[in-house]
Image (tube, rainbow, N blue to C red; front, side, top):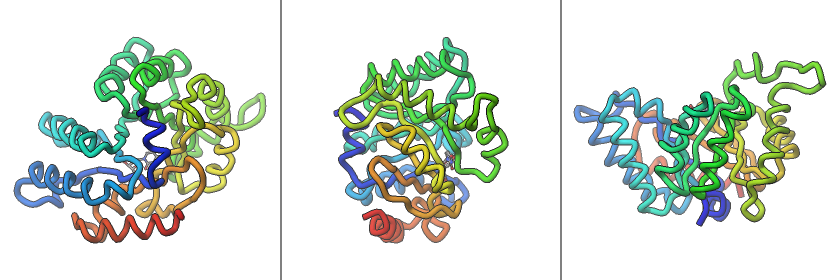
Length: 258
Ligand SMILES: O=c1ccn([C@@H]2O[C@H](COP(=O)(O)O)[C@@H](O)[C@H]2O)c(=O)[nH]1
């Protein structure tokens, strides 16, 4: 089954995994591995995907990168769709290498991508998603307070920069449909509910990944294809690893999304 089909058939909540070693005792990597695998098992029926933030694994050094790979494999054993949040983007030839590293290496998975370098930088990701049954989540309107500095810039031809990105993606999304949804998906901060509504209209067939739930102050937003995503609030409910509290928090978010 392709990524978009698997995700669309599951509850619209994404677990973000952004591990902080200082919260995992004297042997942090082993504890992160065990806790994450147990959490994936506990939440498997309550989430549509797990999103691994590459930065936190890269910060753990070479063993951290290996750990992310092991956890991706662990998620796939549980049939959980995987999103690698690495926000890649570079000239075409390098984009091809990134696409190989994350989309070809994990068929049926998804990657977050930065659109700043333009068409030739995005196409290798779209092609790889098509070949691997995966998906690409392109940053359109990010959740952070400063996202407007460039993304909201008004354009000479009218509209704002993030709207131009969304409109370009809408054309690409049409060519990458798998039934109702497209392999070309978008990231919109749940912290910007008006833009979520607006971008849903501009991108009717794209899954929208909505980060910023909980720790960044975002509230759950319901709607077809809206994948609400929480990292700290679900992975560290109450500020520390806690399986039972994570299940309760997931249930609370799901109640708001019903
Ligand atoms: O616009 C964006 C895009 C990505 N992120 C990432 O999501 C998580 C959010 O973590 P929380 O602990 O839930 O705040 C993190 O990995 C970000 O890099 C985002 O926040 N906003």
